[in-house]
Image 1 (cartoon, one colour):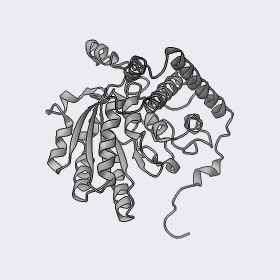
Image 2: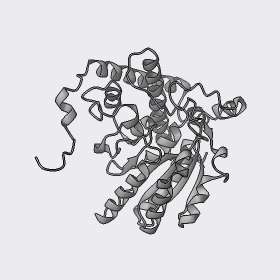
Image 3: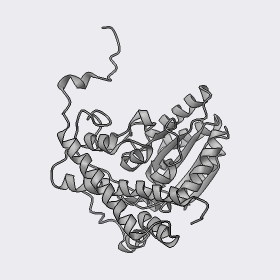
Image 4: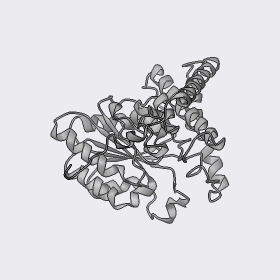
Length: 325
């Protein structure tokens, strides 16, 4: 890790990663206990990609997510209370109880409600980029997608459009090696997905996606490029999900040696060790920080449980009715 990022910033990034990890863990156990409805696709192990990419965005900047959106949303500024209420399908959830785990977001902080279709957020990010350019703002769009989406037609169309129109879109590929249960090597011949950006004349970087400082440094370069009108960037963030594809996935298809190697590269552990090695904080203070995060999450659970359910007529709000009245 480089040392040019200030210590206070590293501590705040660590806190945000810790919030994401503990939120996801809490959600997992609530589902196992049968307290929470629906299903989940979690992102434990990918906290550094979310926090590193989004930490320096403005509230007016935008983000599009995937079917694994919790980390992205919390990193962009969606509140824990509104996220938890959404998970309980409550009226004051971030999407009014209509979205659930795969469709969280809050447009007021630039978090476009997540699209669960693989690669579905990419054309939306391009559309937002066009809007930013037409309105002559210097806002940027971070577009998250996984390695599986890189084989979708929407991926190629979106990269090409962003390149030829010089749009302020940062394509952040969270390459966790698996599309559901399929290893990337089974469906793609190239070693690094980032080289695909060459086909569209787009600059790219390959980044250690488990090191939040390295991710953030790459993000800052891409953000600066986008803000000054120099167009899109492709970042391949090499990472690994510690959980299954969804809550009923025991990961029996994964090699145990591979798992062990990646689990040892836990993004929270990497950042925590850096903080302690550089004496940016103490172990006691970090333990207190974790306690405060857990308290915040537990309060959010109680808030969500006590929140009202939507009324039947709420199903008709924010719905477009075309044709004659």
